[in-house]
Figure: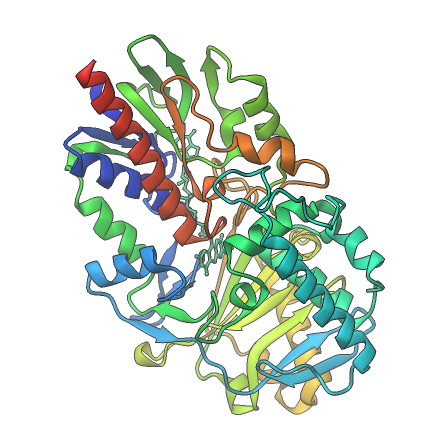
Length: 476
Ligand SMILES: Cc1cc2nc3c(=O)[nH]c(=O)nc-3n(C[C@H](O)[C@H](O)[C@H](O)COP(=O)(O)OP(=O)(O)OC[C@H]3O[C@@H](n4cnc5c(N)ncnc54)[C@H](O)[C@@H]3O)c2cc1C
């Protein structure tokens, strides 16, 4: 049996940050993790064909808007490199039209009226999002609720004249799937507006430029951070392959039981697992109704990432950025250049989110999925710049895929989302303490929910709560 001051479930960014903060405050910790690796949704992989790396989970950070993650990069002496911004990006509409544009521009072949609607929606939602009180969800800054009702994102788009099949609808649907792994019809506008404010607005969330969330890659890989964080804990404080199956609360603390028969007693617990996975744990006594509603009503994003490596970045050589976006037609929603020139790695990362995830995994074998991905990539490239480069899309060196929706104990990415009408009821419940149990994980963050920065912020907040409670207890 293990006996500690604070047990932490989950060895992702949130759990490790909480563990380090609690340890630095002078208390003992045990981190209990279901997977056989540390990092949770962050997963850097070594390539077999070279000494380079690729990311199968998160890739990007921003050094200014995400100061906590940048501080970790600095603390561990890691290097960053900017995302590639040269060449044309391609948006492929459901009827097979390829619109191309330079990074940051709109395509010139889309009617101005359509672009104006898109711009207006982005301005209005950014403005309305400012009314959300992120520290006290469900309350409004200035007292006035937003003028946008908590309808679905899809209904809101339609109310703004953004029709299915149009450039704007395709763009926003691709954005919804990439941001949440879910369709606009599954996203409540108040959840979305809260998310927008947390991520500092549309431009910040969607940009690969200096102001955006996709600005910098970590040269040594994101997993280097969690590896170094874990090294700061005593070796016997980390328990991998130990899914927690039961949490028993008593007056003096909690007892955890795991699938591999580990028993951990702790005075306080920080639970960093995504809320939709609380259902894997038998809570005694049962969680209050509000937490059970949260666990069963949030929707987990359908998300998979495929990385294709090549001998050279043929899309760059053909004048393309490596961003190919489309909805309702093929097995991936969008792609990004993940090339690392310093490691001689030429890579494209393809994201299959929402409906595209279903399209991809309707192909059961890896070979079938590989064929579907490459055929579709070749189709888009062929339609955008002609058939002479499509062969290059097939000339893959390594094909790596990571499925996040069915992965046990993670079960969705990047974050559990709230549907129409749910925000006011569910958002205030996210961080509510239940006896000795404190809740963290990126989903509970008040900034950058769904991102590494949010995971770290939530870990810090929960550590502060338990340290405060333990110090209060000690004084009593
Ligand atoms: C493909 C992809 C791309 C992304 N891109 C970016 C990006 O570019 N930039 C960015 O900032 N963010 C990105 N994200 C999001 C980012 O990865 C997450 O926000 C972050 O990793 C979440 O950290 P966390 O600690 O909150 O949760 P997690 O990493 O999910 O950690 C929770 C841990 O709890 C464990 N657990 C759950 N239940 C139990 C149990 N019962 N017992 C024991 N352990 C349990 C899980 O196994 C998991 O390891 C991306 C995510 C994905 C999947």
